[in-house]
Length: 263
Image (tube, rainbow, N blue to C red; front, top):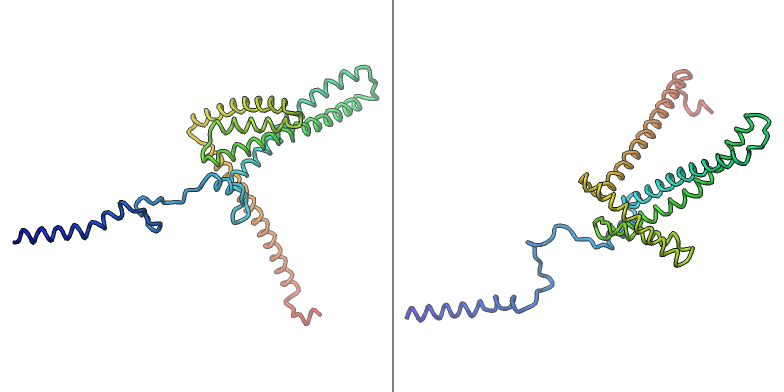
């Protein structure tokens, strides 16, 4: 009797519990079900989200760290191109002036030196202008493309440099036709490959990454800006302090007056 009763209880329990096991297995997961155990700690951003953040300003209207580094690279390219082009042109100008004025008679040595200096200065300015903006644009485009690719992929690789070099070389020679674009792309790819291998070799030896370098450059910029703000605040404080001291001296000399007495 008790055995029959136990079998009925067990059978009834199994029948009642079967739907609770079977439905989750054969049914679809409800859209409101959540997995709090394997839930990630932060929302994973996509590549386009990171690129959009790179080209956006923050809450205090400052550009992103990546764009700031691109601007620094562009300015560095302009300065390097200006110096290299200026020195190269000034050297050629010196030799040209000597060759073209061997039989020229000057009134004095001072006049000859002045004309030579003027000729070299003008040539330096032309060379700086000729190469400065070209190298600046090339460096800016290369840095912008490589940085955008690394931000999209969330890591830096040699392929980013090679791709940026190919695209930049093609754009740089776009005005000369398709053949020149292919040559420029090839030269840009080779140069960026060599430069990228050198950079990544140095990074591997030092144990750093491009992200670390970008952050260091951005922190350096913030430190310079902070020092500038401190200097401005100090100058304003000293100015106000001198103004207050002068006001106290005038009050002590002439005494305190009411507005009615002044009029």
